[in-house]
Length: 338
Image 1 (tube, one colour):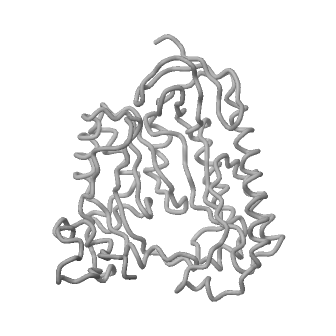
Image 2 (image 1 turned 30 degrees about the vertical axis):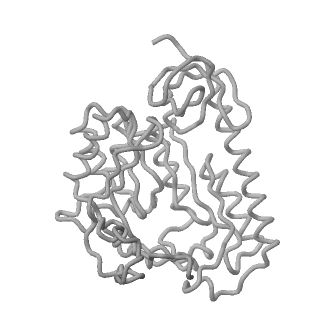
C-alpha cells in the first residue's frame, strides 16, 4: 500500500530508533521480526492514562495455546511474563501517581509465571502486590482462563478484600463439542464449577464471559447450550462475538454458517446478556456499595456494576453510596457521608 510509510512488528514497535525516520529514508520499510523468536517481555509500562479512575498494568504477553479460531499467537508470539519484582515496582509507581485501582492485563493472564524462574502463578503475584503495595486500594483482573486458575488465586479471592470480586472468563461457548472443535482446554461444566466455587468464597462475586456465536458447525442445539450457560453459570456481563474467520486458522477451513444465522444468534445472546445484567443489578438495590468514580456522576462497584449519582466527586475518588434503584443497565445511587 503506497500510503503506508512504515510497518513495525510487535517487538519493533517498542524500539524508539524505529520511529526516527518513519520509513522515509533508505532504511527498511517493513521491520518485522519472527515473533516466535521472542522469549522475553520487557517492562512495557505506561504511567499515564486518560482520567484518574484506574491504571492498566501489563504483566504478560503472547499465548502458548492454539485455539482454532485465533490468530493472536502469530502476532503476539508465545507466552512471556514480566518478572514479579518489576510488576510490584510499577504498581508502587502507579499508586504514587494517585491511582486507586490497578487492572492486571495480559493476552493469557492466567498463564503468568510459567516461563519465570520458580514458575510463580498469577495467584502468587496477586498476593505479592497486595502485600508489598498496602496503599493500593483496589486490584482487579482482566479476562482470565478459568481452567488455569490456581489454588493460590482462589485463596486470594477468598481472603483479599482488595481483590475485586469481578471475574471475566474466556468461556467462548457453552457446548462441549464446539469447545473441542475450538481446541479449548475446558468443558462447559468447568465454567459452571469455577463460578460456583468462587461464589462460595465471595458471595458477592459477579462474572462476565466472552462467547463466540456462529462457530463453524454450530447447530441450534449447540447455540442453545451457550444461551443456557448464562443462567447456569449466572453470568452478568457478556462480550458476544459473531464468529469471523481469520485467514490461516483451522476454523477458517471448517464449514461456515451463513451470516444471517450468525447475526441472529448474536442478537439473541446479547438480549440474554441484557436481561442477565438487569437481573444482577436488581439484586443490588438497597445495598451499600463502595464506588470508584470514573467521571462526574458515574462510578463502579467492586463487582464492576456501573452506578450513577448526583453529588460532586472527581475521577479516581472512592466514595460510599446506597443503591436506590436500577435502570438502563446502571445502578441509581445516593452518596453517603464519609
